[in-house]
Image (cartoon, rainbow, N blue to C red):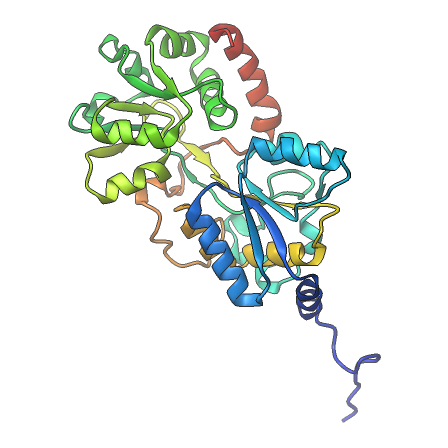
Length: 349
């Protein structure tokens, strides 16, 4: 038998080994991610444990990051490696500004790209060019109640919120707020039209807030009985303590799918380009995705993580159900903007 050895170094090419070595030589990686302490803890612990490369975490993951990066680049400073966020900032700001490299070509870890390990048989991306990686998808609970004040059965549909008895008693995410606030009112406009939006956001006189932590406390303590635009991650501590909180999924429109802070972007001209690529390969892997998804109590679009028992059953997408994907590219870049323009006219903002 004739054994042919590889030329050059005498070893077969190993792209992952080469990437790990190059990343370690750079000495660190800088991640801008969600302002959630458990995410910072999990990502640092998981990545540093596996590769021994220090991870610096900037807690933002939102619109402020876009403004900061724009100012830095105007000054000739390139300080960020990877951006982890919700949908708006990477799709509406980073991508059209030309600040990102495509992720698809740099995914080289075999476990990352095996289609059988991903929902619907493919790696998920947030844009048609496969620049932004999408790792999370789950049913958004946009409506919760304090069951001492409001029974879930009293609000079987979204239109039930128009009942005069709820006037002035609804705590609502500010419809002028970017991201989920605007996505929700656009969802209402698309599914129910302008009259519903006006009656809900004006005639019912809801109390608007952008402080989700305060809103969760108000609902738990009974200051308000209904929270429209809920944040389950903020409610989780109260649920664990036994507060009388229940999720409501109205039946008169498709349930909403969201992605939390589940979009991962590879920033170009990065200070640690190889460490950035290694981090993206890691967070897309079963190991990294388990650390990440569990920190946000969200469902991964990978199918090889086991039960994912950190996710309650009502947030799991069910086979055969038609959903409204609020992280869809066409919705974010076209449908939502069109609806939002009409909503702004209606509500005067």
